[in-house]
Length: 626
Ligand code: ADP
Ligand code: MG
Image 1 (cartoon, helix red, strand yellow):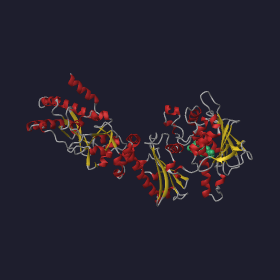
Image 2: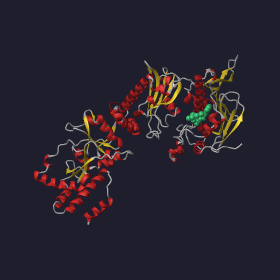
Image 3: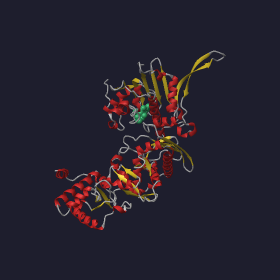
Image 4: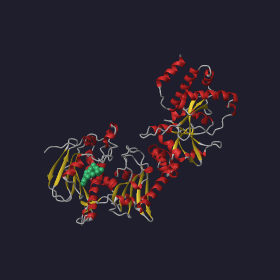
């Protein structure tokens, strides 16, 4: 008999499991029990559509048996079983996502994030066992097989006798080491506690022999040990329980057991509705972003149950895209069991539930923002971008719903603020909601365009993500206040009288600006004296709807249409540099050309735009220095 090798990724994972420093080894039991429960579910489904098959609830259960002498723990089920091919395919590979490669080595090392993320449940058995044996007989088959593995080295499959359909998993529990004790996984009371903690709501009985001291029959003071089989789990699904019976820990355990995420949820929402459409739901707002959240791979959706039976893993129709981060499940008595995906899409009941869920999630986020700012900001850090996409998508159809959930970094508060907070402290003479775009608050702070607005004492919102400005354009206004880029032509701020130039100067400047515009040709739409610059010599502003930031974002898109912002070169006429320009005007055409190009290129650099000819630019600087 040759030993087969695991697929490469599985092998790595197995090594990790074997040498696991994962603190909660006990979860292996949760994983194996949940697999057994899935296997029974599969028979249940089959019986729904297969006339020849009947599902008698009494025949379906899971047993847990510990044997201290042989140091083995056996988990058996009467589920659908596995064929030889199933054993090979399901237990020899981590087939599902193959995305283990996504994770960095360091993340892999502690194993913490891994469990459950890739459907690696079964492998967790190797955290407590040196040998794992699986004996299984598939429904409708005569033959049974034994799969056995000592870990990363590989596995063997051989034929074996087995009377009934189902699966037995036999774990040879590891010997204790100096650091670790494994004995606990053979202790009745400990196993009972683990089952209660993680698998209480499993819908099928989990049976185990339990030994109790009982008064001997006919005796008044003599006790005897009596062993009898008991069902350990209550079998009531958590979503059917009363909120008041449940603790945060119960919800957290459910979240982990369901593999909704490997973080702790920030918030849970337990819904029980008994209206025209009856349903129960448990929803979670995760704290951390799934590693593939902003990629195509990420699939949104909630688990959908019909009267306690899972009918769909990820029902996408239950969640709008802007709330795609929500995890959880919905159980409704009013949905038919063998409903198809296509029919489901048009299901009226489902639509009502979806609408309801959307409202609940929104309210929950709102109350989090109001009552637990720290948590909300943690949430926003992970999923704020998605909310902003939500504002922008579908031509702004959801902006009303989402605008109060948005946050941006504030020049005044030096932290994230809401639009409501911004607007409510606007001074009377401030017309607009000002924003500035850039890579980071540090970079934006240095932008010359912010000077005038900040000098006026007005607050600026810092837009540091590509989507920000697009979302603001879609919003247009918030509480009737228009959004205004600090780089836009008209800032709506009165220039100081004392600083306006005399008519004579204006005429003189006009000719100079004309000249500069001619030099820059189609690179800028206009050259003019700046009202917003205080200490910097130059900056770019824009006219019209397209800002420089938008030009950058749009040109980075694959099918960019070469959309350009109408740029205006603004010159600080109170700056020394302007004196030099004036002095050169009419006398030294070459110098005016040199200065103009230098100033223009400087303005580009400040905006984070590319200089067309860097060599020429450095040569120009040298000319000035020489
Ligand atoms: P997941 O449960 O997420 O699919 P696991 O690693 O826990 O991943 O299990 C891998 C696969 O092995 C399961 O999808 C199932 O097909 C099969 N399997 C595991 N345990 C059993 C069992 N007790 N009965 C039938 N099939 C099982
Ligand atoms: Mg599993």
